[in-house]
Length: 246
Image: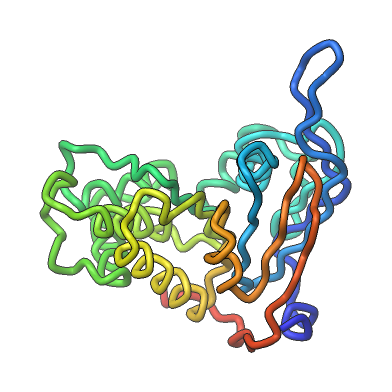
């Protein structure tokens, strides 16, 4: 509900964000985008191909910088940070899930998930212990030593989600997380995202699937690089924000 959103502190703020690609004239991909995401929200950013969704994801995920405008993540003005500090913020605060799973075929499930902690300074023993916990959280305690080739598509995506969650990020970004899955496996992933959000994780899903977007508490529509709509589903009552167990 909108009321629940207003009572929460913002985790992400985009203010008049513009993104252009070099050219003569420059090609403008995003036009004065303004968006606020509150801690503990679950929302879908929806739009057709070419609407600017992937570009927006790159900016939100600190993988790219805007041409102009301001982006704040957990109160940090990204324009004021060096590339090194942004990389550290990304490693500790943001988790990514993509349509393609990007699992390393020669590694076990535990080892694949533990790679999500490679740049955090954790010891190998602690990375493994946290990887086991993350896999338990996504229902894969029985697949710890399996390799990607031994897993179904839905299980691979759950491993990818566990890898994104292993560092206890404040923000989980999912780019078409059900796009490569059949209906049943896709619904399983959606149910998992809903569960993780109920536990306190802020989740932003990028999708072209309007039915999926409509099932979430909030959906933001992009069209030609502009926000076309920002709507709330009043059937939802957001759970109190909470962190994951240490």
